[in-house]
Length: 156
Image (cartoon, rainbow, N blue to C red; front, top):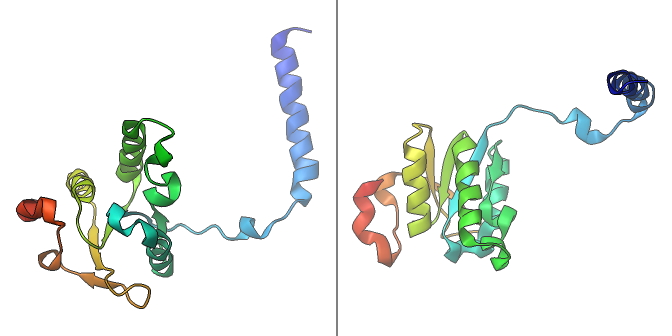
């Protein structure tokens, strides 16, 4: 039997297996498929400890949060070169439907804002100074910048 025929037979058996056995498998997760916006949640490393509350807020707003601190920790805890994490972060950012910025603007968050701005997709900004009690949407004019980048306020 040649390789092509073996491959065809395998595909046929796999299809039969899936049809017979997998049709019986059920799980709650299979019924929870909804099309939702995917939102990149940007925040300063100074607010690293609030990453779960940031995601909680996003989920409660009906979107799916992509939070780099939850995905990679803080630079994957130095297990790989930081630029690999930055590149992964930028790839995720470019695939998201919106950018939501939480808390003070750091240099890294400013870079994410500038990259995302080029896409023309929506951005929202949130004050998290009263977490966990409150997350409040704010305008660009009310943004707070970390001391080392205050001179870049006009770049948003």
